[in-house]
Image 1 (spheres, helix red, strand yellow):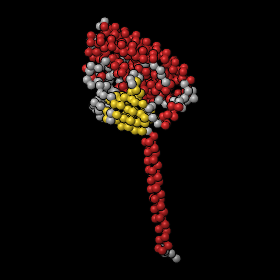
Image 2 (cartoon, helix red, strand yellow; image 1 turned 90 degrees about the horizontal axis):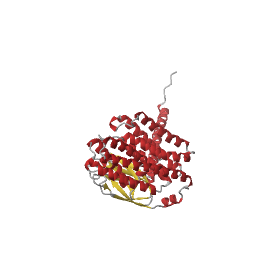
Image 3 (spheres, rainbow, N blue to C red; image 1 turned 180 degrees about the vertical axis):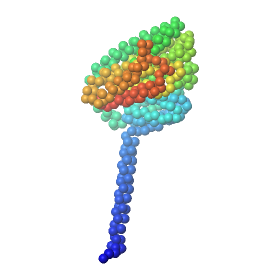
Image 4 (cartoon, rainbow, N blue to C red; image 1 turned 120 degrees about the vertical axis):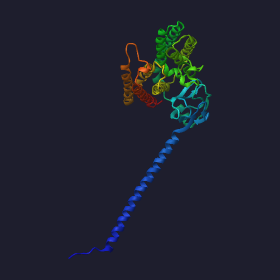
Length: 395
């Protein structure tokens, strides 16, 4: 006998199904709400932990020109609103504390600075622009961190050895600068070009410390791109001006006063290096900063007359590797970091090695853009790894 279905009995079953579906939807929605709240809370926490300050670098000034932040970590968002690549520096007197170079027009780069209380100056794009001001106020955390600074005992050896290295290299730089000036005064273009390459590489080896002195570094090694009138700007000087005269203009007479000024500035630099008292935390920081600058320079298309971008990268690696060599024994309990840094140096050396022949490294025009890009990427990564050394050592 066939049985008919009972509609009255089926109705509760359908209502139960609809209720179950409704609860499932509400459960999923509740999950999304909780996820959003949790994510937003984490973002707010991160925003409060890392203070973010926005700065616009225009053609002639920064906006704002005067900043006040509490001591500790601050993330500066630097937007280039001019039509030229610019740099932005935080200076303590003539000493560079932090900097970001080669910020492309229309782009924004970030710079994270861990600042001690005090008053600082800011360079705003072109070197001829007026400087801004940065006031850093003390906090309880900054006072506590100063009181809890690690012992210097383990760093006495590395600091002493690095001073010896700097003394040797700065003496070599002074001698190379004089040879360059002598060749220019003798109107010997062949000798002058060879002397230029040797002296510029000597400068790159002391670059991590030379970069501390903003006034000298700007006079000795600033690219024409950082001056209002580029190569014709009266303030354009040093190695880059000599490079332009030797390889673009092909005449030496106008370079005589430039070369004499370079010798004087190199002598001043040597004196400052002799008197410099480095802190342990500066070793890895200065090395990382110089590699980042070199990587940023490789990211930018070189000037038509540029000669030694790759040679500069190689000499910079030499100077920074000396810092790493001295710090390496202190990383014995940081095997993963030590291996990553060592691998980074090896990778960059592997890119450079095929480019070198008996006469040295090729001029920039003969280096493929892909090779420059690879080397820049390797230096960026190596700089980031060196930046991990201080936290690993408790600095």
